[in-house]
Image (tube, rainbow over all chains, first blue to last red; front, top):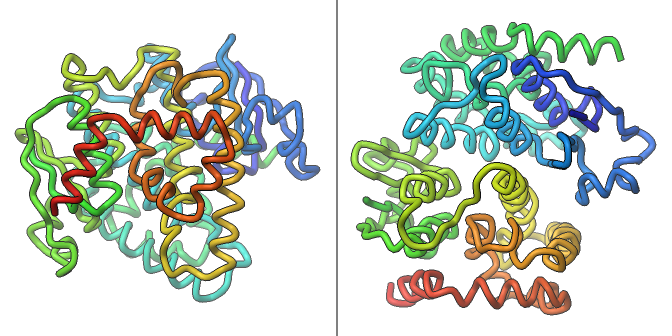
Length: 201
Length: 201
């Protein structure tokens, strides 16, 4: 199993967190994004979009971090943490998985970047909306997908970690259920391993 | 089974196309977006984000069009068109499902809107990249997920239909495999039923 990526990339971290939760052995292959290697061959043969990470398992090559994680969680169902549900519970979890990808992620991305003030304000307003909805959801269930930690929560980890290191931390801290959920998932041993990989880089 | 939405909404059309492919009976409930009913109760109890569509099946309430379609395709596997694969083939299809959601959809959305020239240019450049990659993929496989029509293709229908009615049509027409794929999927009887619903509205 090989992950081609960069330890500072959110999407790469998302896959690394999943592999650590599943306690799987893998090889990490740094792509060299800073020199633009992800926009050239041979990386483009792994992902034609030139985005990290790409993932190899035997003869399978996959990209898109959330699709990679679904593959890992399904294929290695019996290893490490169970990250999926069955049936109707999974249908509900899938809704919240798409909420992460389409609502949370765009609002939480590039918060520390060089975007203009109006764009930051727009993102903050969106994030307030998302976190208000999360607060209601997390008052009913321990995790976003249901009462168990699943891929839904895991997919939030990289952006949430950055959020907590930015001035947007106040938006999490002011919502008790979101704050407790954030503290819980950011302290998972699998996630700490990803942070250690980044720190040692 | 109930779909709460609007026939002119891309996300609503995505779910309607799936229901017609699966030959399922359903009730369509117009939400009244033009009067802002989607941002108020009772709709917010179906989707706290105030976005259409929302979907009900017995005691299940779901939102996010792609998650709804995954639920329908899994739950009613034995009805109508088979829209999913198993195992490794599904893992590959899931990659292209995320490509639609994260690459194609943002580039193809609001192309006819009042966005500024720079934004249109940026979207066009992104769309060119995506369609170039689709051209390569569709030279190898009849459909994006593999050799069968699946949810991957179906999820493209609403945006693709609009694209073909805009000046971006040239980007599809100039790529032979993309053009053939587009003509094929836009002519599916299930999709024509969605267009008829819109026309009769």
